[in-house]
Image: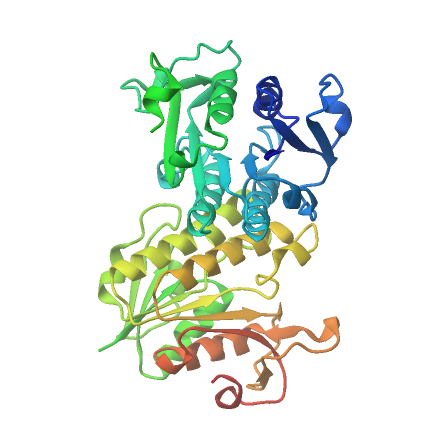
Length: 211
Length: 211
């Protein structure tokens, strides 16, 4: 059975995606630093692998067919962790996936990663990290899909989104759960390969905007 | 006359290189944040351009034939500046140089940039920045030469170096002035294109080790 490796499976979006894929009957390998963070998920289709993204975490790649990178250093850490996780661990994940010949690599990037120079003083280092990681993936030769969500919120999913930028900056939000829905939808869809989508709350179904 | 643009011309190595090139009768465009830092250099072959590496600094590229990137955020700033200067400004310099169709781009990188995963906790973010910038240059299509000096010291130049790693880690030093000598030597030498050299104090002449 084809397995999806989720890197950062104990993060908000990673954990929701893990649950959704399992609910769909899909097999998941969850790479986490601490397996206790997934203790509330019970499924014989879930394989948990403990690993440290600042070290060698290549081991689970040999057993997976698809990869979702949804790890992030989080907003509370400094730029050194942004460099180590959002940039370097992402690049390593790409390299491991390439070596393991996986069929599809789905990257959770960020709005603004297309043009970091436009970022605010505070956000620019993060945008640079995401930009360089995305570039590394694009050039890797892997079949990739990059999602660049807008400002993340914790509202419940609506299932309705758009990939075009809203006219008003304040409307550039997306619910984390809808990002998870999008990742779940995208897994294994090779027709999404070689594409980059921004993601915002909207009024359309995924099938109508991801193509 | 062919001009060399030095990015970071008021830094230790950048300023020594500027002086050396001028002494050789070469024309230099010095990109600095504050022109007063070069006030002690008097030459009609020196053109000083003030610019901020965190903004658009493309202007002087149109007038140069070669580029030396010797800027660095310095050891006292945090990883956010490492990301903004050592990584992003370097990538932008490469892009500007590419657009301006310069004939040779010489990058001052760092030992360890080949494999950041081996770096110490403290140095790893810097190594990642240098690695990604070097990769960006290598893929740019520009005629490039990358120098990766060892641990920098302020001793006077000896003019004697080596590009092979010393057996003992403690011997992995290089005098800043010898790095400047190397940059001065390399400018315009198209036969050094597409090459990466580590640099350490040694016992050989540049002409014998750079080829």
